[in-house]
Image (cartoon, rainbow, N blue to C red; front, side):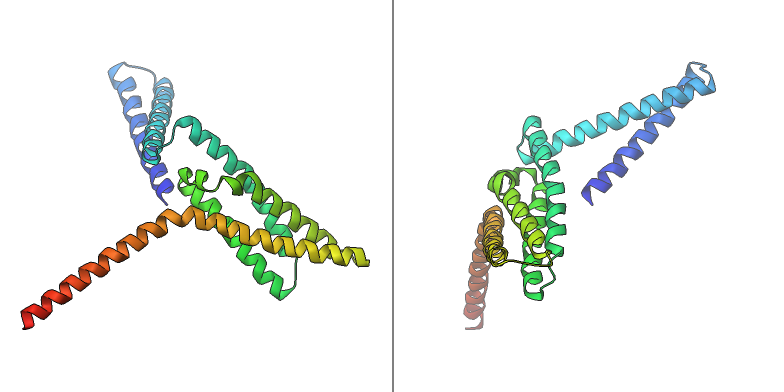
Length: 214
């Protein structure tokens, strides 16, 4: 939502700049109408790019990231997106109700890590293991499981491999949950601190009320 409003704001600013540039070119410098329109488009484009650069710079400053770090994180998010799509396809191919519930939890956890990082890029450093290792392993395992489970005839070896793969998928699901917990650890600490402060304030108010009533 924030990105949408920023886009609207930049677009409004660019449109205003384009109109003003075109009017100045036409009335102030007696430029032809077509040429004034071209100048207006150039002015609007320049204003839009400038506004975006300023907005990005402020965002990076608030996140405590350099432009190089931000670019690196965005590249990792870009690489992770198709992997998550592959994970979703392989998880959805399993029809067992019990497994479907487990798969949904895994998918929701993975998406939450991705969305948190996209929203706050600095969180990437709290989930580096997920992006570098765990996501790739999870995708490979679920695709292998989906392939084996789709075979019409299964040997004893295949059945055993299915069981082992499923167990490993379940373990990897717990691993990515831990990745999410690590990512949210600071938020939980902050929440617990705020709850403690609120409890202390409540006790203080309660004690004060008792004294007044006496």
